Length: 319
Image 1 (tube, rainbow, N blue to C red):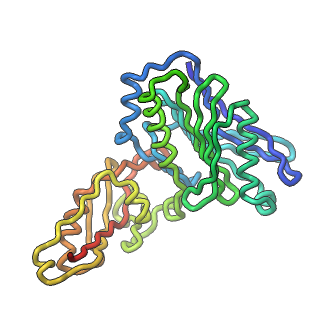
Image 2: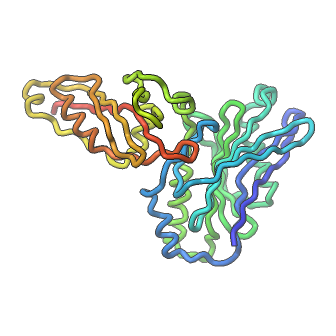
């Protein structure tokens, strides 16, 4: 039997009391059968991207999560803890965030906030800290932690500080001691798939869909239920991105360079519109043909599948 609870540990920083929140996933001691559940979990190609506009983050999950919030009070301060959680197969996933008071963030170095947050989170549940390392996520400072819970299960956590907001993306998998190394490897596969997909999204994605502006990848005005993605974000979500064939006529004419193609991708990740917006005329048709065959991970916004738009760049280099 598995249960999920939220841990909230008091931190004292610069004379102020703060809450450090994290997903504390407590799994029962019973052995979890790895087949066929684990095999299904490990097929990460079927996972879908979840986007939180309010939270300004995105992550890939093996199903649709539950989104909730909780207010935690510690007079004179009060914090709203936002939670995105999913139990699926052998693992449990969560992204939790809350905002520090501005005066604390302004007067406390990021490294101190992160280290104190990590320390408080471990102390709260009396887990064993196996490792902690500095990281960056989408350019923001953070920490990666691996902990062994009291019942032997393994929790891996990314803490990321973005302005006043502290994010904690956490995944818990079954205990590893005495387990076959291949099974442990699969545990790590699902954990890393989740953690490596966690990103802070740019302002274009967190805001309402932009008005027409093809060159910046925003959604066309006549496409409903659509979110514009930055070029790097769209490419990162590609499942298949075939290279275009070099047209013989373009090669004979010594045509080369970059072609930009604006695309719209439907809720299943299929390109439904592709239009060249720059590049040599002899190369544009090949680039558009390649873009139409691309496939992308489906994107969830507020737990609903949406269309996305963006720009794919293709570089044609003469050899």
